Length: 364
Image (tube, rainbow, N blue to C red):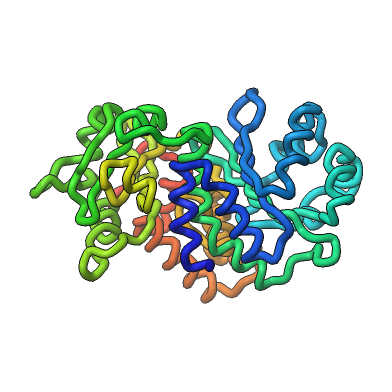
């Protein structure tokens, strides 16, 4: 079941009526009672999708203005977000959990206990909360259950970016969907041929460049290498690996992250037979005081890799960062090599410049 779940996650990003089925699978792979997706976007009330058991609870919570009155919800935006799924009892103060009667008075009669959730903060300012509800008799999740959820987190993060931009509305054709996303975007074939682009992408010719046979290239050597590998390095041009690719900043332009999302089943039909959607998000210097959670969502870093990258971006030497994380320098170097590969950087100074949103990379 879990092998097929990433495909379903990406399909639901464009066809939101599929989220309840996807969330049901998410609860099943984690041995949970139910699951939900809640999208926070500014001051407007959140939008949500949920499985049948928990949906009435969320509807009642929403009707009672629970989002504004809940200590838990307020803490979501004031505490440092974790870079992985967390068990609520290990994250929130006990008094915040016990005072949430709007929730508890409705979940306890259903046999539901705590929650395991992941907060994905988007570079565009929104936040997606993926949450699974635990049975009271099976409240604390096992390491294996947490591992299965965290393996899905990068897919959920990318799908969450699209879901927040579309507002949990169904994509209605290639052009309208790409305009509504409000991000530079293109639809590509399985071989990388450009099927369609939106106007925002067309205004960035220094970043997105035409190539032979209707293909596209990235105007940054390291990013283009990762981009071409993501599209072409699968034998027989099968489904491309899903990637989030960083593009280094240039004068007058902040760093970018290029996200590649596969288009399956209904999403494939919506986007005129395209096989992948490419969307770019810009990072401001203020957003690049990078938390491990942001780094995990952007670059597919593991929680350990994200913690190291965040420590390095604060100016720590590798030895000091390793000591702070209680790992050996050898282990930290292994993590750093993986971080380099995932972020398209080759030197620690380049990595720090990317993460902090510097005006330009130092010379190689």
